[in-house]
Length: 347
Ligand code: ADP
Ligand code: MG
Image (tube, rainbow, N blue to C red; front, side, top):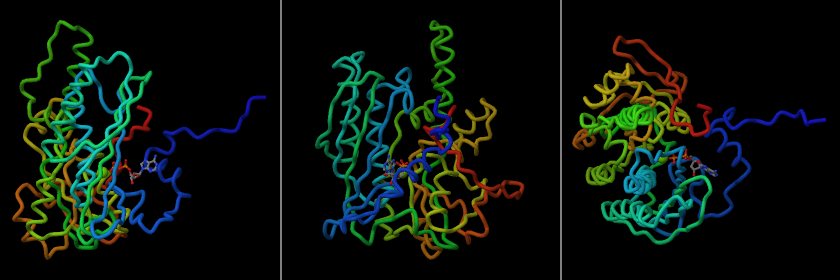
């Protein structure tokens, strides 16, 4: 008789619930483990400076497609996503380790390309590559990067510090990386149906760059420090504004009201979204991989934050009873839904 006990599929839980489920029985035993699972990075207490530690795993076919991601860009991105998590704690990254699993379809030259991107990111952000691991793979390329950084204890910013009436701020503009991905996917499908057709990418330089060569907001962390502003909470936008703002609200035990017309979306993103018949704000809310920073500050900090270029205030924090609301241009209230990237989803 086959075992009729039903096993739970990964997609029933989704990525975030899966992490919660697998790690719920682990309690922190070391005094030096200041912050464990649940934020952009872990915090370790080794004296005056606190260590910030984060790791990300990128899989070919899940996180990147080598048809349109040059290996140099991939190396650069893989470093950036980790540095972004360190900055999201209001800390400065200093070292990375890089581990790769490669199949024999890769040549030494192609891996040199990958490492030229890793080097460029190290040079650009002033960090050192200090180790890693190399092994073979049967399923394509896998890259895992761990980043270490540090901050003074009183400068660290977590996801759980947002308080009622705090202002909700985002850096740069949102949805551009998602719009860029839609263009790359469209051109890939055209190319695969007829390889003689060359991709038409010239009009999309800005959004393609946002997808293929993202940057981490080191400049904003520096500007906040210059203005002597310590946000009450912060997260980097890797999964989309909805999903990432909900992380802050859930962990802080608060609600939010954000205003659609205040969400910064670039002209190029609006134009591309229109080509695909998507509302531009959907790219901003649900598109991932922008690596902008989402943070909250107390209202007294308004003037100082306004001094920093490229920061938009999109709403404020409320009591949790008010829910998590997006106010449309017409004044309608919509409940925010977590619809970020979910590598466990079935589609
Ligand atoms: P981010 O998008 O900022 O990289 P994630 O959503 O990947 O954050 O992770 C959220 C939290 O869960 C982090 O603290 C991370 O270290 C932790 N985490 C993720 N996967 C695992 C795992 N397999 N085991 C233990 N902790 C994990
Ligand atoms: Mg993060």
